[in-house]
Length: 458
Ligand code: ATP
Image (cartoon, rainbow, N blue to C red; front, side, top):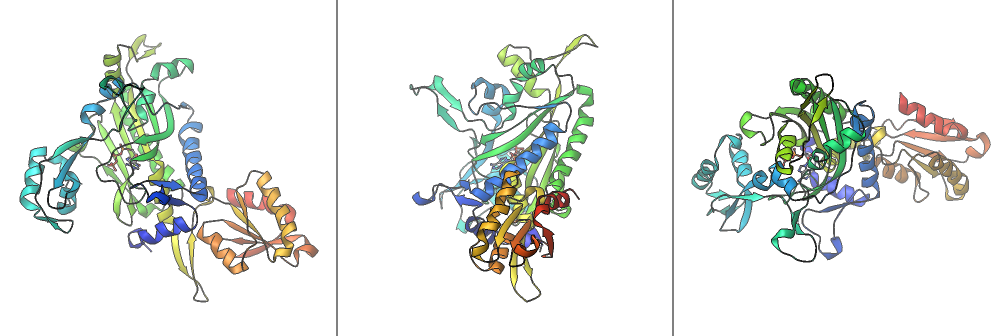
């Protein structure tokens, strides 16, 4: 089944039933477009982050990690351009009092890129052509540019001086620490600084479950390079990002690359490539790779009066490096992995099973230990305890028929089911069942851990 034919509400229900994602503040009627991650969801998220860190920090010899704050000095957002440029075109229908992204309406109805139009042209087009929308007659307001940054006040006096913003991206925390990191780690160009952290955007039209929320998490790398090597690094990180997404088990046919047209580039970008994913609600950006040039460092140099520069000893000169930025949202990646792996299968006996065909590294639980009958529980539990002591995420389940227990593990993507049965006491063996093939093998209890690890490596 193609992703576009999958039923989003069925997937959302599934994720709630099995403890991946819950509506946030549910007992109070929820808070629009906010979601909490359950025990299964957070394991999968941790696996995603671990993999990103390994690929973009650990395995890249010149890259290091970082962690900056959500709240920064407001001048950061003046320098970065977010205070003046980080806006969406908001239009309101006075008949149903609903607000929309004007660019989204245009793109939906024409399948053309809205960035080629000025604000006035976009406004005129909508007012003249869209007489009915979202099940209602229309009477459009003018377009208002709406800043997406969340504001709050620091300290006890709520006057203008104390207004601060929740960061809309993690990148700026890295730029303003360029000197600190480069000097303390004695880094030589080219090098990257990456971090994982929460970002906040007061989106005009959040929605599509966890695809677009107002609080989300990003994994961003700022790769600093010589200005004349920017194209090479840009190409390298587009390719690397694509391979990273495929390495999470996402299918080739579920993604595509989209190069931004000149007119739609963000104010800081010389070139941007999006990696898009086919969700049940259509293609959407999953990850973006941008050539941010020297825009950010230059602006911070100017506004802060600090020299954020790199001194090249060989050339005996100071330069402002160019920046290549691969940026991806954890929540969107989680959704993509779930959608891609969520499969309904007809079995030989005409039964149906839901199976999440996650790749091993992503599985929340690598295995589940099951005694065939409850009274074998003690022996089975000691197998379970041995495996968790070795650092594997493993479940134990003794409730319900063995068939139902297998289905439950299939539904949450558990890779192996290990069953302790009547023969186990005599032959010191268990049955190990593979999630995807459902094939079963008999192996020695002492070999379970090695078996799992060896199979993973192949
Ligand atoms: P979009 O066009 O979908 O609004 P964007 O181009 O503004 O996204 P970037 O600023 O490039 O997004 O952010 C980098 C990544 O952060 C995106 O590729 C996406 O994975 C994630 N992201 C951005 N906004 C959100 C959001 N509101 N909710 C969840 N993830 C987001």
